[in-house]
Length: 177
Image (cartoon, rainbow, N blue to C red):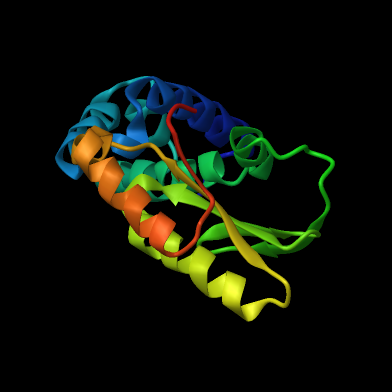
């Protein structure tokens, strides 16, 4: 059975607010697993879900239906990326990209953004897209939700050096929701 939309929306809002406070995108998998377990046992979360689906499916429902879209939702907003890169919101967009998120602006600048943990794919996406589009240039890379070693200077210097070698003009490290 499916949860009513109002119930699902309420649980999503509650868990996503909690996730924002936990910096969910930077948590190791083992910590996320513990939260899934705790939420499954919480009467205001798992207890509500278990009214509509079998108890043994509650944890999976929380993980796949409620939390899986969380990070994608937090990464979707191109205006946040434009602001971080100093690009006016009025700047025209010639093309939108997904997987990873990105834009080609009317003036040819290529931007990509995503989880800092996916930095190699993001750098290569900027590079590739700048070569495939006429009059395009590798402009901006926004790495979000850096955790662990990605918060350290030497790691960031390595990433920024790779971006520089690929002629990406700006690298921004952006954390928070």
